[in-house]
Length: 327
Image 1 (cartoon, rainbow, N blue to C red):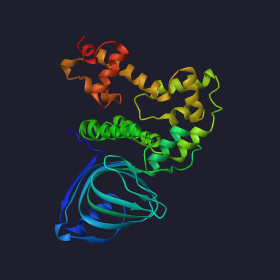
Image 2: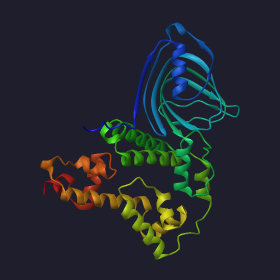
Image 3: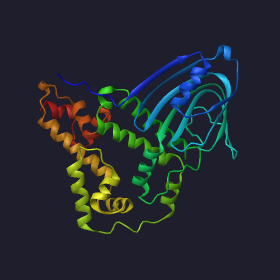
Image 4: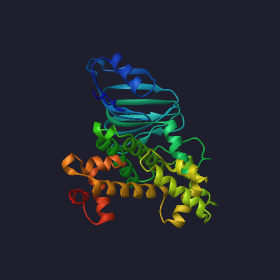
């Protein structure tokens, strides 16, 4: 008898008109807070839906009341919010933040007072450990702990890009239990969201990366060979830039510089190219009459969205993956 597959994803859907119960649910989902004032509780309503996996929580909260909440300093998570309706004002002792509708906002980690009324908000919660790992991969091992220096994205275009990355994780990966059960796909999509957050919202690591020049990346064939060999051997595993750098015995920034100079790309682009080549080989060897599909083979190599995989595949091999599968 086959053992059931344990899903790494947990979903929640809470609807309540009980303020006390609703606030306890919100504390369990986000963080502790004190409700200092609240009005019109006779008409109170809460609808909270979302998904939780590892280092990420994606949620939508509709809070049908007016309230003032005191939120203590945060040290374990970063919370980002995109408001679709209602009114909200955040005060942290240094500034007043009034998020615009439709624009993602990095919520302050200092102690804040939040005044809200009838809000409809989508939130993304990322653990500090996830963001610190992503920062080391993006900016180097000596980067300080992640600290964001602005609540606003660097540009409207960057905000739209970030929202697209969130939608990919939410809809294409976590929205499909079969895809989410693939640890490689889930890890890649989670890492992509963390990296996108570092690129889109100003932070100390991004500032340091822009200020300093990189002295690494000397033309050392042995280092490059070690990096390429590690990618080739471990392409089917959950690896990142820091793993490749450690195997090559070079710093992350030196590795990135070396790949830009000698491979005209990045280590992760090389990893993606190798995974695409492995998927191509599997498509050629597959038997569609035995149940092999483009989607299953793509997911095996970390490509969660079969449509995007098909576009990349056609660009690389000049035909659709389904055509290769049928040959």
